[in-house]
Length: 282
Image (cartoon, rainbow, N blue to C red; front, side, top):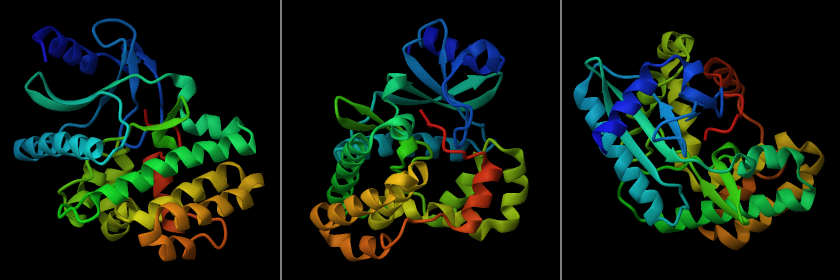
């Protein structure tokens, strides 16, 4: 990355959030992504995360993010141009993801909220195709690799679903390590304080992301909560998709699609603590 661009990133980190440009989402999982109003990144979305005092942990995070982006692409997941940087700001290295900006009107969640039943089913099919493609392509991979294909993490471009959530990198961290990352990088101070007291529950949040059938069930559940009037149609779609496109995991997926899937009570509570209100994590 050119020094001028690195300096511009450092300036963005130092700037007050109001001076950075247009905030795309105020309630991302780990930060509030924004699109700079000027400088070399006006065509990018910038995501600034909390720094860590452990230099080795940051280096590992950078390597894992690069590996995860590569793995997603190798597994056939459409992804905008994405880069991870550790930017030195006054002697502190800060993790930053810089990603090609997608058209705001392409974000799947708001389109699911307003689209017709047939239009929303077409979007679910597009997202489902990415989910099935990913899991079939990583089947047999010895690495611990996950995927978080929620409605909030997709855009729809020309009928195709594009995934854009690469943080935390769901690769090569074991279950306990990923649980710690969820706490370390939470934007919510309350979660960082309270979370360790409930570490087992926090760690369990990630389990859906490492399960092929649960990612499909999660997609259907989110759609049912967004548009409950179409829940029966979404359940029918999910059952058919599980049989047709996710045969190795169909039985497990079908078991979760008897009724509109619901979030566990503890997960709902953690979502409030984390500020996870379903806004697009662009």
